[in-house]
Image (tube, rainbow, N blue to C red):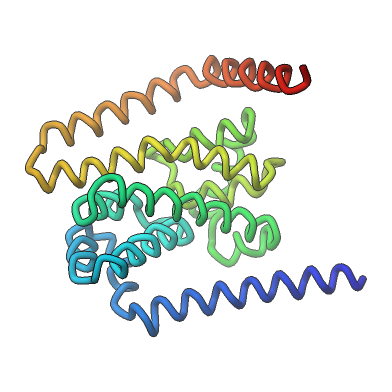
Length: 241
């Protein structure tokens, strides 16, 4: 009983600190950021990031990416493209990727603790949360979570909520999101940098190659999954040896 009370107290403390962080960022420190988040307008995001100082702009970029995942429905590509335009490929990628993985891990942890209550509060069943959970459970949940992060038709913000319904551990889920999001976020940030230079054809080509790779991964997902299983089994064998 006492252990459960301690856990509940720690959980409520973490929630309170998260709420204070969001309030401090959006209401007191960066009051104009929330309207930009809601707009989803790439031009508005870019203008806001340009108007801020270098450090403040990178913080804003990270918050935008974090909130994009938590919000479920907001698109991530405009944020990453705008980040690439303002801060260049590598810096925007580092910030966006770190915050994307952190937000997914946080939402997964929160959803695992609150369960269906959080999904009911956010109306995720209507947004496709049940179908996404079935998708992840249709095969190896870790592999399917990684694939879901890549699929254009699945809002990536819904993935951690759906993954929390599976048997995935937080570590396995975070690893899947980390690996799956490397290429898409890097490409989107690079596209932003290309657009700034007026290289529209290379930018379009990068997006086309990314979409083609995602399609092939989806088309041959069973073969890729079996290959992943063999590689994982080989690595486990080496560790034992």
